Structure formats: C-alpha cells, structure tokens
Image (cartoon, rainbow, N blue to C red):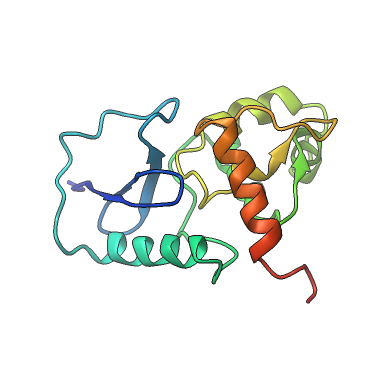
Length: 166
C-alpha cells in the first residue's frame, strides 16, 4: 500500500501544500484551491525524498532560477486528462496558450470545453502549468488557485524567465 505524505511550504502566493507518495509528487494545492482534497490526515514527515526535491524545485521556481517545477509524471487522472496535463507542460514559461491551442496540440481541436474541464482538475498547480492557459481573447480566465495568483505567476515568468531561444 502506498503511503501519502504532505508538506506545507511558504511561497510568495501563500502556503502551498505538496502531496507525494514514495515515487512522485501527486498534488500541489493552495489553501483556498478549488477541488482541494482533504489533506489534514496525511502525515508530515521531517524527511521525504520526493517532498524534499519538490520543495527545492518550487523554491528555485519562485526565486526565478528555474522555468519549471519538474515532476516525474503527470498525476493520476483519466487518459484524456493526462493527455491535456502533458500538453500543458509543453507551454514554455513566460508564454500563454489559449484553451483552443491546447485542444489543437492534443489533436482534438473541437474539444475546447473538455480541455478546459481537464485543466480545471489539474492537481499539480504550477508544476503542470495550467496558469499559462488563457481565454481566446487573451483574458485571464479560471484558475483553481485564483485569478490574482494566475496573474502573478504569468507576470513572474515573463519577468524572471529567459526568453525562449535566449
């Protein structure tokens, strides 16, 4: 049986709760995150290789030293959700795509609403960069961590991350 563990880490956007098993990070949630599972019963070990590595990766990201937070694999989900979440990881830091661009990237150009629903269920905020997806008109639309955080993350990446090809 796999044992889940959690760790709350400080970020410029408020505490972020990381969830992992012995093999991979499975979740990253802000306290007021929509669709945040109940996490209070999870243990908080002092040392945990996956949580230690994940915390270091988030620290590097927020310090502007890394463009992305690496994850071993996309989280558990339906095959369609995993396909969408994998596509999100292809969006370069400092860039945004529309929901339609994500749908086209997975070869399903008419599945924009289904793509949006899958993005809304992303359990690995920031690590699977759903904040890089915007509305068709470029507007900041839905983000489970809140629109203000989405705005901050896009701004952070556009200022601190090197331009593509630089």
